[in-house]
Image 1 (cartoon, protein in one colour):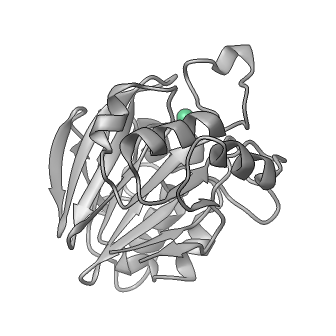
Image 2 (cartoon, helix red, strand yellow; image 1 turned 180 degrees about the horizontal axis):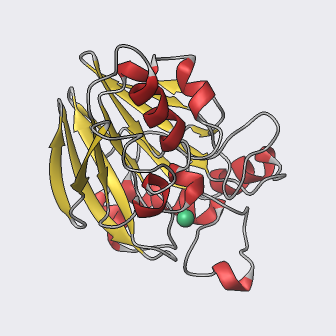
Length: 245
Ligand SMILES: [Zn+2]
């Protein structure tokens, strides 16, 4: 399994880094997770638009799904048209982004599948388990298994005790870490810090940790130090083109 980062900020893109976005590739199959703002062009550095086999979206915030739209336009408007793209998302999460064009433009470009949360789906060679986490919108934390390894990705969400068991023993944990050690009051319980991410990685026994969804302008070194104060394994901050095998 190969995992590649396409972005890594939360909320809105920075000059050189878009929002959430990850490619998970196994046995020639490419799953795109959370095509957030400004992840479409980094995606094209790794795969052609027509080569994406399925898309999984954790929740309907645009920093996690906005660049689904250029991907679908490219697939629908190119000649020849690409195959209809399976989209897996919590019910209703994609209503807004899919309404940007009239039905004729993207007709046949995608097939929607409601993601059961909690639940399990099989997407190509990958098994995807989901767990809800506390967030402003329904969010599916995911565990993706295939080729003898597992990764987990929190999507967005406040600290959630059951996630450690859900992610137990994963080889890679991609964890939302919006702020370093403290959240603004309106985000408490709905998002996480780098300390929370490190604590989760420690409790889950994760093999390695990527911190993601950093607030624009954050100092990555501060996030790394905070997570390292509670988790002893390897840690990186998600930046475009970072990859893991
Ligand atoms: Zn969100």
